[in-house]
Image (cartoon, rainbow over all chains, first blue to last red; front, side):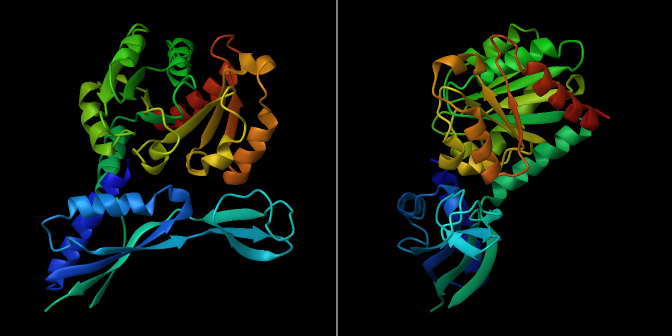
Length: 114
Length: 218
């Protein structure tokens, strides 16, 4: 349910940026979301469609780039995963460290200025 | 035309969280954000903490639930300040709600503020409330694979407390497995085991809270 707050924030940021750059229509909102964030893109899209009705962001696409988790293995070096793991996916040994996967960012918007 | 932005979402929530942190800092109040799934024993743990810290720390509690003020009423019976937030449709306490709830607590008469979040291992983990310490509680009846299923809750918490340990003889729950999983997700997490029913493990857990609280209270 926290997707609603995120959708509202997204809309506010996108509208403000579009206005600043003379955008008449927002075509796409581009996001980077970590896999650990537990955000369902379809749910976010649905809510964004709802909150953006009647604004210049109505009908905008939401492009979500998934940010994976970084895994550091003493033997195999760095790799990536889409869910939490205790062992290196390649060699099966316990991972030295894990990081990333927790971004929640709006990276850019595509706007029409004509 | 592409406009680069590169900004974190939830800026407004972060702004409220910062205001909360500032208000708590001004009064030197140590705040704990307690998260867990429903029924893990958060309220019982807070009740035990209030009784054990009586005379040492002035405790206040802000309770978060979708509906009812049952928990705040329970807490008030222990003779401390309590305020109830009803989040209605929201599955977690939002920072702006906590910010206005602070108006109902006399922070000058508070050393330690417990914020009991809505029972939910997902959304509360997403939302910093300006707390000093986030504690995730996990009861032994919930299964020992939870840190792997809900990594963000364990990753963002400074402390894990395994609750209802008096039930260990009756359930298939391996505390060591939980600890391994929790540390895989968050290597620095501090882990305690406690039973609010028998009191076992509580002194170590509460001793640590008190020490952290001391640092902030100055």
